Image 1 (spheres, one colour):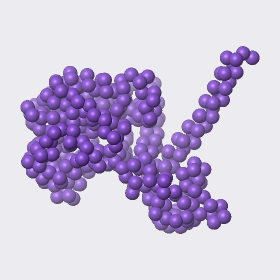
Image 2 (cartoon, one colour):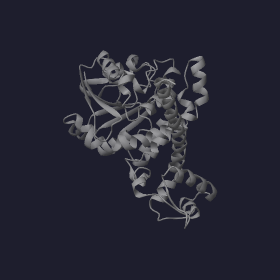
Image 3 (cartoon, one colour):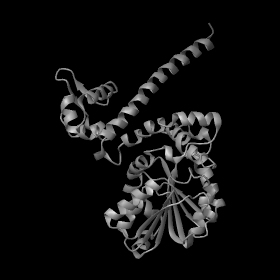
Image 4 (cartoon, helix red, strand yellow):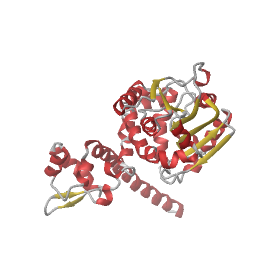
Length: 360
């Protein structure tokens, strides 16, 4: 046998081992999502070593399911197990990345994307064959998961890191300006801002009626009378005659999955007053795939893109840019939309996103 053949066999064996790891990791992602949604990680984070029955009681779950879930956690080295006492323990080093008390470092939130995307696998396979896309309405929990995700990346950084990207912006908000969030989802950022800056007026647009209603209810509970939410299709935002003038516009991971991202950006540009500013958070990646090979979650982002961001745009006969449209494409579209100044920032707390500050 030649050296080349032996090398190929070695490579094949290594790849087989890797695929076995992938299968285990994929299964673990599902179980981490369940641990998050059921509150099992939260319960175990504050417990001493305990039996499966004690853990089930603390989390108010059925013991038999908890015991099987713990089996996955033990074999994945997420949870420690003492065979003598038959007790389980979530190490504090692991709880620091898996419990709600660990926010904004709770990676269990992101694990929810795996079962969420798996729920539309059949439709995605059909799209590979027939084209088209899967509409927003098929993603029952997407806005819920995204609200949790933004709760870790956007909300904790909004006041001390994102707003300061624009000099004097906080002072302007305190004095009173008009603010728009395009693709606002459940409106958590707007409701937070509305509470901080009662002299400013806030408006949120999103395609999802359910998400918009959630934002309204949160505003009502908080007593915010300076924020309004509207369900709107933004595919022709650049052509809408009733567009209002705003001093500040936000998008948080909301441009790349639009049917007409260029039109949305043009509409934002046309909505800004002469001293207005547009702040966009979007995925930190390149438009060239080879430049994303070292991205720490590149595979995850391309998967989310294929099974959500790209397909929901194509379902509206849109462009289908996808999450990994990249900084190069983003800057080009922003420039084409009429923004003369485009500054790009990376924030220490958020390796996943770029922050664009655009001025007309």
